[in-house]
Length: 163
Image (cartoon, rainbow, N blue to C red; front, side, top):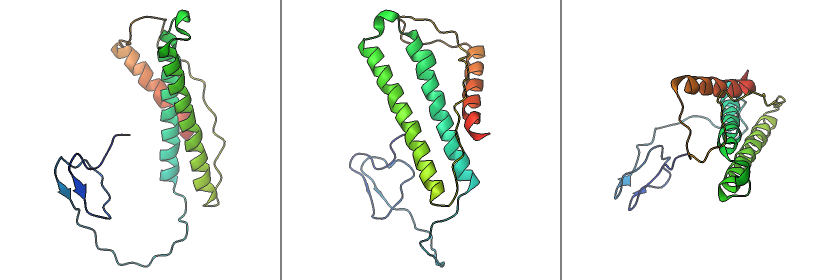
C-alpha cells in the first residue's frame, strides 16, 4: 500500500483522517462533517460487501504468490537455488503467504465477533498461462495474448475465493 500522509515539513491538525498526500511545507485541515446521532459501542453486523472485498484481497494475494512461484522463481536456473536472488524471492513468497494467513485470521476474527462463520477457503489450482523457462534476463516481456491470459488467470484465482 502506498504511503498517504504529510510530506516533508508538513503536518495536519489533530484528529484528521488523511486520505491523500499532503504536499511539502503545508498545514492540512479538513472541515469535519457535523454529526449528531445516537450511538452505542456495540459490534456492528457483518456486511456482504466487506466480506467480499476481503475475499477478493485474499485472492489478489494468492495471485501475487502465484506470480512469484510460477514466473519469478521459475526463471531461476537450477544453479541459482542458493543465490541472493533465490533467497530474496523465497523470502518474498513467504511474506506473501504470511499476509494471506494473517488476512484469513483477521477475517475469521471479524466474523466470529459478529456471530458469523468464515466458510472454508480452498485454494484453486490454476496453471500459469505463461510459458516460463529459466533465464538470466531480469524481466519478462509479455505480448498482448500473454497479458490477457495472465489477467484472466488472476481473476480466476480471485474468483476462487469469492464465488
